[in-house]
Length: 293
Image 1 (cartoon, rainbow, N blue to C red):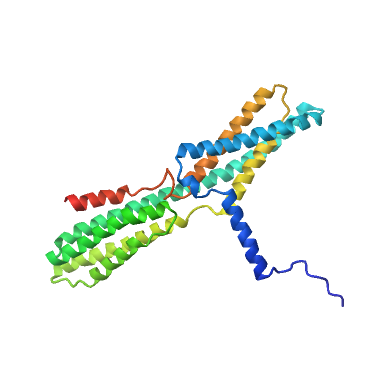
Image 2: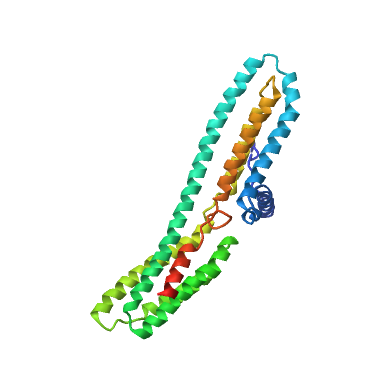
C-alpha cells in the first residue's frame, strides 16, 4: 500500500533551539523590558500613550483616503464598522479587565504576604524576651540580622528582578540554632513550642515572598493584549466622517485610553519592581522597634 507523507514533521533539536532563541529575542524587543522599571511612572505612561497615539494617527491618515475612495454608502458602511468595533471592544474589554483584576489581586496578595512575614518576625522577636539572657541575646541578634538582610539585600535584588538568597541564609542559621534550644522548665517549653509554630509560619511566608517575583504575566498574554489593542485601533480607521477633526479627536481618545490601560497592567505586573511596587516599609518598622525598644 502507498504510504502518505506525514503532515507534521518534528523539528530537530537544533531547529527547536534556534526557534526558542528567536522567540526570546522577539519577547525582549516587543514586550515590557527592564527599562520600564527604572523610569518614573509618569514617563512610562507618557511613553505608552505616545506609542498608541503615533500608531493610531499614522494609520488613520494613511488609510483615510483609501477608505473614502472605496465607500459609496457612508451610512451603511459606518453602521457596519460600528458593529464590528462594538463586538471587538467588548471582547477586548473583558479580556483586559480580567487581566488587570488578576494583576491587581496578585499585587495585593503579595503585599499582604510581606506584611505577614514582617508581623511574624516581630512576634517571634518579642517572645524571645522570656528566654534566658544568653539564648535571648543570640536569637535576637540573628533575627535582627535577618531583618537587616531583607531590607538592605533582598529588596535591591527584588528591584533588579532577581531572586534574593541572602536573607534565606540568615533565616536558616536562626532556625538551626533555635531548634537546638532545650527549654529548662515547663513554662518556657510552652513558649518555645509556640515560637516554633510561628517560625514555621515565617518560613512559609518567606518562601512565598521569594516566589512572588515569578508571578508576572507570560509573554504570550502580552502578545494577545497588544494585538487586541492594535485590532481595535485599526477598526476605528475605517470610519468615514465628513469632519475629519472629530474623527481625529475620537481616535486620539481611544489611543490614550488603550495606552493608559496597557501602562496600568505593565506597571503593577511585577509587584516588586517599578515606581508602583511593594516596598520594605513593614520590615523597616520592625527593625525600628528592634533597635529602639
